Image (cartoon, rainbow, N blue to C red):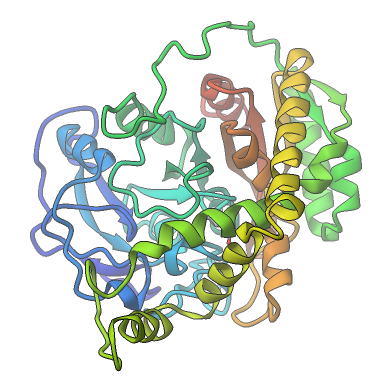
Amino acid sequence: MKDDLNAFLEIFEDAKSYGEGPLSGKTIAIKDNMLFEGHKATAGSKILEGFVAPYDATVVKKLKEAGAIIVGRTNMDEFAMGSSTESSAYGVTKNPHDPERTPGGSSGGSAAAVAAGLVWGSLGSDTGGSIRQPAALCGIVGLKPTYGRVSRHGLIALGSSLDQIGPFAKTVSDAELIYNVIKGQDPMDSTTISEDTYSARKKFGKTIGVPRDFVEKEGISEEVKKNFEEAIAKFESLGYGIMDISLPSLAYALSAYYIILPAEASSNLARFDGVKYGIHKDGENSIDDYFKTRGEGFGEEVRRRIILGTYVLSSGYYDEYYGEAQKAKEAITAELRQAFRSVDLVLTPTTPSPAFKFGEKSSPLEMYLEDIFTVPANIAGCPAISLPSGFSGKLPLGIELTADLGREDNLFKAGKDFLNEN
Ligand code: GLN
């Protein structure tokens, strides 16, 4: 396989099939934050250089059992912090549609590998949009499942209350196939849920809610706006009912996310101390070893979020920041769940604009705005899918459908309708 895009950090020489099952012979790439026994895993970070996974992540185990051939580990933003794969310690990944642009992130390698046809499917992780956003910018399908649907055992944690593993594929049917293999309750992850956790089944009535206030206020580009209107028209022509809905608390989602996420990340990343995993730098004494290892091992964005996270969790500010963000989380969740009493799905664009150039988003805040439409689903735990919805010139665009907890089935139905897969 020739990887001109730097989608892969490593292509496994010994790739093979471990079993027979629904994914027999299918080539799959995994994001570099998932453990595959005997193989390296760096989460795109220098601090994990040389680390070799001592066991399989549950998703990897399931892929093996299903017959998939895991062909390599893909590039990503360091510790999955970012929306462009530019924060990887191992160089950028190029967008297959335009090599001067990013594939999105943080699972940019996994998205680019599928879009370029290097693999049949791949896995990414999505904490605030890291599957859906790169799927949109690369013109493929990306699914973030319901929180707890897929085991996080063996996933290098970013924000534990938000992280979910999910598939990238060219079609909704293929994404569904991968999802059916990797999902399921796991004794190794106590946050996983049983199949019947959300058992009250509202019949799929083909109704889609559009939160116009939210979409229009958030400064989307003209081409995205036009494409979004076309997507609405397409759903109407397919017999879907479109309803305007109001979700005022979504306006707080991004701010809440950028408090909750750094808080959880700062605590998850405390384990990288230069002793247990990866690199070690010698200082004057043990605490100095710790500072040196972390100072040199972590990149800029990771250090920024650790500082932010420890700050919002500090005793004097906890209530003011973390406490307030938790209240926003409750409001967003309640509002979305209320909406799903009257609609089956919520539709927004996936991103405010198509793929951007390397270095174009020069401030962290500009980069964070990429996540405006994707973070609400993580905050509320809802499943959401990005579907390719057309092009602006040669650059792909995507729309995002969000469903109620446990209702991936509705995403698959509407997704197949939209992409004419039926
Ligand atoms: N872009 C978001 C962030 O930087 C989302 C990351 C993710 O989903 N892993 O936090």
